[in-house]
Length: 258
Image (cartoon, rainbow, N blue to C red; front, side):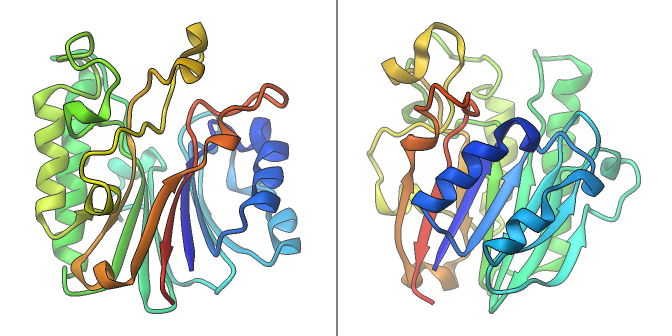
């Protein structure tokens, strides 16, 4: 069973590439972020032709998340159930078999002290509260997405150059770590504790070809899924395309025993 997370940076702009990638790398569950398109314009029929059922929580121009599954979707929940936070479409939850899948697109944030900086920290507090009120670490939960935080210096190409910048600030890292302390394991680091692997590269300056990136896309799992976890990998094929233009993120794929 393969569960993938992929920030497509516009489903409309990346649709052709996405379906080419799915031909090469079929997955059972696909979690997408940054759709930038209203739900009514999502390509449901194209996914259905490949055997996927999709649940979408999206808005025009910004944000947006989707879970597409070949194994069906149960108990779909869109948003936190909080009007203030759900103006931005950033989280969707569904059951796939015996696994609860949570797909998150966390705010990018901004410089320390800005409104977007504080909103990002508030989002993580809201996420932690959402988990505490609705789930238990004893459940089989796979939480994936673009979290816009590099958890460790190992997760950025130049820790000194990027120190205390967006995505590496101590406040951001602590906020995300508080969520993980609820009961999650970083699946990639569980299997590859010292491996350098990024998931995002700036478009400018050929950063992907120089491998000057950050690891900000994750697959987090609760303890019951540890024994079923077989591999986690970043598929560089989708990022190293020139035509059609790729997302600035690469897909991350988790491989689990059924």
